[in-house]
Amino acid sequence: MRCGTKGASVHLAHSLGVKAFEYRRVKNDERDAADLADLLRMGRLPEGWIAPPAVRELRELVRHRAKLVGLRSHCKAEIRAVLAKCGVTVSMSDLFGIDGTALLDRLRDSCQLAAPYAARIGSLRRIIDGLDFEIDHVAGILRGRLALHPGYAAVQQIPGIGPTLAAVLVAEIGDIDRFARPEQLACWAGLTPLDHESDAHVHRGRITKQGARLVRWAVAESVQILPDTTRVGQFRGRVAARCGHNIGIVAAARRQLEYVFYALRDHHVRALDAQPHKHTDKHADAA
Image 1 (cartoon, rainbow, N blue to C red):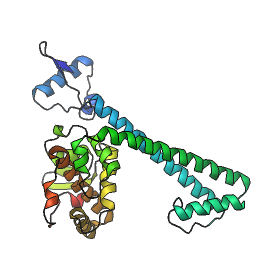
Image 2 (image 1 turned 90 degrees about the vertical axis):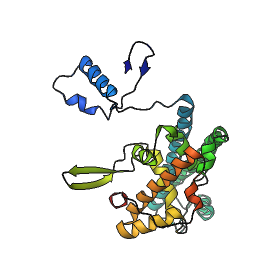
Image 3 (image 1 turned 135 degrees about the horizontal axis):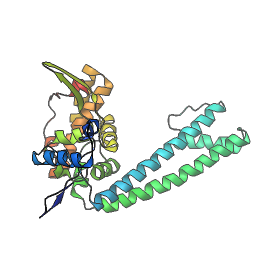
Image 4 (image 1 turned 45 degrees about the horizontal axis):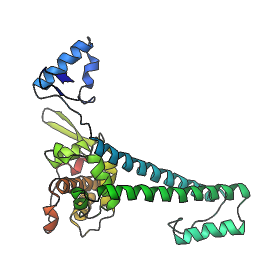
């Protein structure tokens, strides 16, 4: 929306924040413009953020890599499905590790599978090899673009976050200065619970999931592998013992995103230097 005649500025209204406009009895461009101008004047206009070209390019690479990984996972699931259809027992946990690859090679060389099934598995394995190459290639481009990014290096100092997850967080979050507090970042990522309040009654529901899906995935993935000796690992264990495993993961992911906020803003997380201590999360029970 453009306002003023001199020194005009453009404000992008967030579509979700002005969704109620469509329920009015009288709806036209003139009324919409007047209502948007009133919200802007009062400082209550819900605004969206347009990422600059550099951030959009990073996001393109990150999201392309995520799509490639999804395709590879789908191909691996199809191979498992073909083996199950043929009655082949897979005893190893990783079918595509050393032992699993040896099993697939024996099945191919011994001709135990009918020709159509063997051909399908062979085709899927070749596709997976090609996807592995493309995933590594895109990851290399990302590392080159982020090599001098101070926030990228700082985020990797957080336990559980490596180069891949750090690239996702840096690209999807973009300019950290648009968030004044870590709570705002968690809300933007959709990791805060829905609040339903009436008089003195407050009910917190599930997390909103209104935000960057890849950010939620990255922080949740990072906390699941953390040992109990880390700060976030201890916090996850306490919440999980009280409220269940899934709620513990979500609460820990929200705490991890708080560390990401400070890493991107200050390029250092001072809380990680202190000794672990008990800390409560007011949203943990409602995650």
